[in-house]
Length: 192
Image (cartoon, rainbow, N blue to C red; front, side):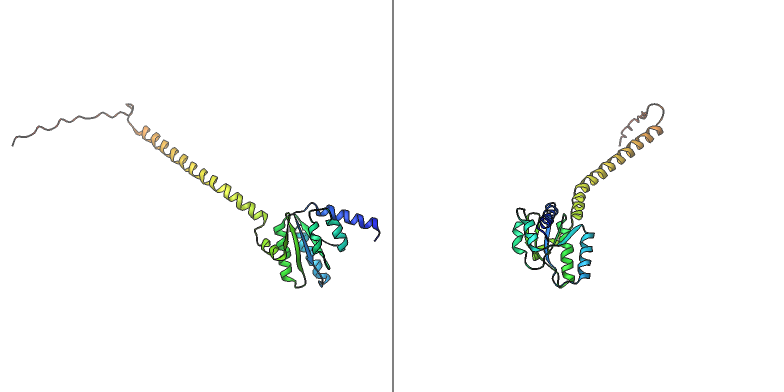
């Protein structure tokens, strides 16, 4: 490959890498072509990109970026995965690693930190971003829903009371609702 073309490939790779929160270095040596195709399809369905480039080009792409520390892990065949959702990406790769004996995660750069394979496995067990957002919304919405239900109950009780008052006002005599009291004279004490 000519130098100009290599520089173009490195610049394009660097551009693609800089817009991601997660980057995983994988070892795909010994994988059959059909298995690699299955992996690519699975990653694409989960919005994770997958590339295989020469190690020297990858090292050059990492140079001067936040990923530069990963250069020490670039040995042997390296596939690079990158994407926005670090939990989902980790989950997909860990699941695939369990299914395929020849595939492994070497290291990962996730949201500014470098993690070894075991840590990536722990991260993969976290709930996805969507689940976490749902849980937070549930925490925020539940108290307000309860408040609305309590206020609604108070209003229903108030309307019931007002309705009863209205009904009792209609059933009272026409003299303004004032009842005349009958006065009884106390009985005279009897002499014994």
